[in-house]
Length: 545
Image (cartoon, rainbow, N blue to C red; front, side, top):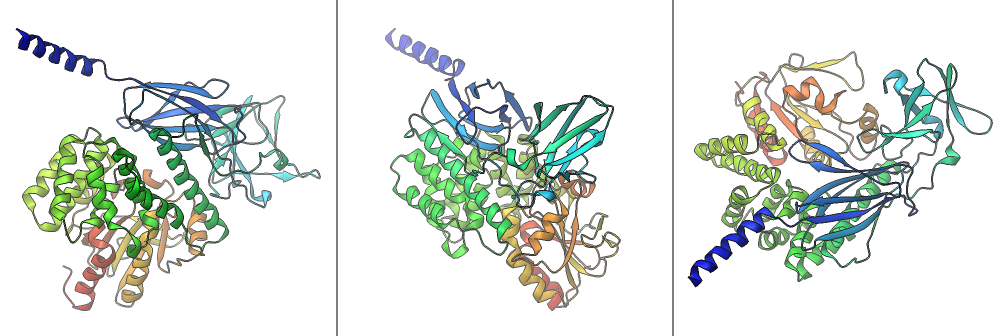
């Protein structure tokens, strides 16, 4: 009887723990960089399943409250006159988490005459923005005749970080969220003409560092939030330095070394795993010779395959391979397979499956290759990893004809590059963007390949998915000249060419033969693999047919 009671209590306890999962309350305030409430603020939670943000009510004092059973949340916090921030919130061992976020301001350009306006009158056209005039008081203005009573507008060209970034103005009757992390100024017109002013003296002082403030800063959750903010600030600092000096390589050595030390010295196993993963986040900015591969090996000891920590950046599972190239490969393979079986997050699971698919392809294991492809399409169909695999192996296939395409030259729109005009040459289609760290990381190898093979019937066509053509032009004035063919996709990932080539993430590279056949895709067309393939066809005279 005693045993029956114990079994009954165990079943009830298990059932209740599932039925009544632990709720966590996350609360805080969204504040300006001066610590004061903003005219308007927005809090959003990212939903992985719908790939959309859900808005959370924010009070006038900037306060918000979220009740969740999830151990991981991705928040986007935005406020008028400030940059939005994207924060991963990881719940380790607490039921209540409270913190304030002091948002960073923008960093302004020196010449305000370059600032332009887009608005609801011309459907926010960036191709035909409104230009301001300047009066004798140093105030910029524009007068527009319109029948509309309410006008919404944004400024472009104000931000030093990006000329395409849009920003609310200095003259507003109200503000409206643009659903992308920024706000539009709202003007209620009186009369036939709307008069809009941009007054630089009303811009709030620059402070480009965001902050986390909490009563108990020793909580693991707060430590992780502050580390995420430091990462955001470092990246912003990199963009500002690049705007001032394009030849300067970002120096994150202090932050990287700090994380490396914490990863090895931290006693708490959870934080040890967190610091290890945070170190891996900086991989595009760590020279190969200085990358500590022991971090990768420590990570699989400190971070269980089912851990929510991988949600910080599932792509880091691929970075982990750098620590297992020459030894303990079997241990890493087992870890990745365990991730597939026990992970609840579909993006993490999909990233593990994508790694197994590529590994099976390299080994020539056709049975596993096909099985893993079927698994990712069945278990993780809506993830970008599954879409990428479709593009790599079901849309673009080695040996098939490259899809028909036409793009205009970046420097001369009268010049067209297409599969027809490039036929007769070996060429690499390089889908990239200046803001993409891994894309920039590929450039030294591309320059080497171009210099070695440019006189042997080889060309590179870099196709930019940046926000504007000017971003590419300015980038090429810096360290990387990229002296080959260039094009720009006006609608970025939504362009017809991006859809045709299955571009769900970048960098994406496709090597095409002189006969218009696909020779290699992605990893097989990068770095040393690219040089080996080109040597095979261009140096040895092997036919590409």
